[in-house]
Length: 173
Length: 420
Image (cartoon, rainbow over all chains, first blue to last red; front, side):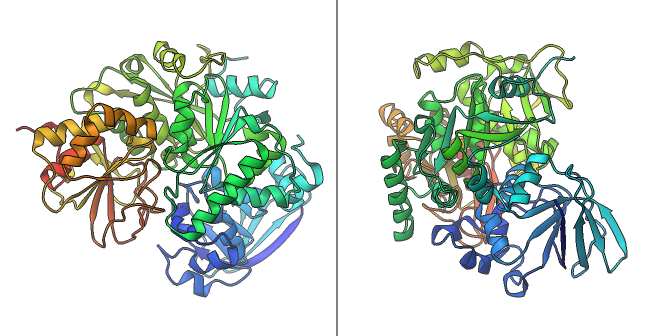
């Protein structure tokens, strides 16, 4: 999987649960990411939805997306034009949902990244998932990311589980 | 080659290969649950994936539990969408009022030892109490299961939780689970399996084990498992005629970590707002005033929970002025049982608000919502800010007995101090 993304860091802390990403009660009235994006992080960062710009990158600490498995917590992020989340670790359901929707979950040490830093993410074509690196233009550092399992790279390369299933109609190992 | 954990054995059996921690396997799913919180979105994915047929409709169940009863026109329409799909494809659907899907999976005997049972809801981990591999998935995963009957899984490493001794009076499984959450932290078991073992398990019945497994996701775990024993078999005997093959860990299985809990040394625990792993002994927060007491959910909404709470409420002399007591049975079977044995009429006499069996107020999707500034003590599993529908309320998590003690006194109270 080859990719190159660049964007502004929007930094959050540890244990950001899915209710904080988008509250359960919002999905009661709509599942549309274009509606839900207006309420992103409203419980913990009320100014976020108004200030987010397409291309921004979410940066977080440990256990991003813990709690509920609700998938709107991924699609609402994509609805705001965010294509990747960089975190120290992800909750497993959020990780799966991100892969399935083509939102890139990058696992690396995020401690040095500050709000507003300009980041770029690059991956080469070595299919093993090695070689994902996050470059911080502000600090001039390069952070290596954990490799992703092959099946997740295949799903991401297809653009998510919808195009993957349209193509294969089943899982291929 | 070393032996296998319960998780490795079940995923080996299901995938037909020698599955070890770290491997990625594709497995046929024995049972998958979709709720009204996740299924409408799964149906969107199903159609977008060009889905037309459901691979194994007899292995799928839908539950209308998060919006029970529907609090709005939009949610009523989501229910209609699910009913139409279930009807068209021959999928069993639990109606509004039948209860929480997780409880119904267990009651209907669909969670069988050795099987792979998933739910499009994080608390699907609950069924692991019946020696199956049970984990939560998202809506897109559910759509893929509808189409293919399968899912991919990374085989988890396993943390062994050794339970020793026996709980003392007024200490409950919720206290065990909170204590483990406090020790491991909200991501202490991330991507991993928790395998409960030890002689302490013999003292815990099936309802108790459901509480333990329900809370493993609050430690980040992929699943929790309990070995099959006489209590498992006894429970299933009246619930299913299906055959099953229990799974136990090999003596030389490899664990990523071992933790031991002495049940005899445990004291009542409480999780402070707004983190499930911000756990301390309940004594430390005594005298904090409460305005709402919530008894219910897939953690604490079963018959035993209501009996424990009722006993403290009645012996304590009822609910303190200024406290709203809200009761939500986990299922209609639970409601019928507490109705027959008089517990329900006790709650009604005590002035409790009785809600429709289902998820109720737990995630703020329907039912009673706490006021601004209210302190809530709840038998639920999550206390995130805004969780119950108001981000200006503070939610504490504790056992049914501790919640009842708080209702009696109007403040957080150690249940061991009741009657003193």
